[in-house]
Image (tube, rainbow, N blue to C red; front, side, top):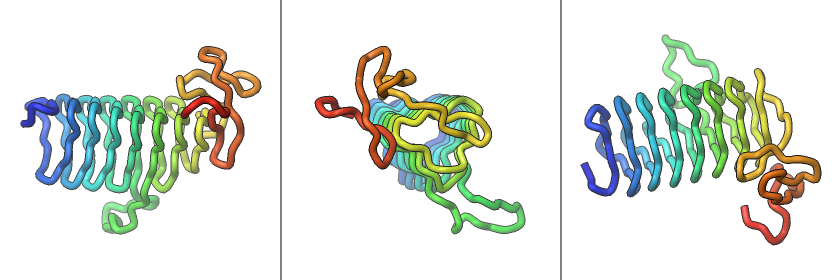
Length: 192
């Protein structure tokens, strides 16, 4: 075990895994080969990651989450407790289809609520917010708030996590946004 990161003794980290400085991997987790985990991540209890998964810096992965082959989390993504990623659209026990795994991308700053399901092949936009229990079957724009089954857009959220008011402007931090092709972005003079 490296002094640069922490792995609880009950967890397994396979050969060929890269773990960034300051990352913590808690009880009963398993990190499979060729997985890359960035610095300062917090990986909860009973988490399975990999193989071939990439996790950016500062991600928080809560208890009972599995990140399967083809999942990429950019920096500062939050995965709520027991949320689910799928990796094959039409699985069958008797038919091996891992060669058909579809990639899933979660862009920086996004939050995925407890017990939500992300169907493989979608992209979750930057700073988007997926509500608890939602079933995401299509791409989610940057800063979109989605929930329900199937998930539908119900508004916009600020990078600070608050629902945007009219304008759209954050009622808490007063950051303003403008519409772009990928969803929303901060207005000129602010950084996202």
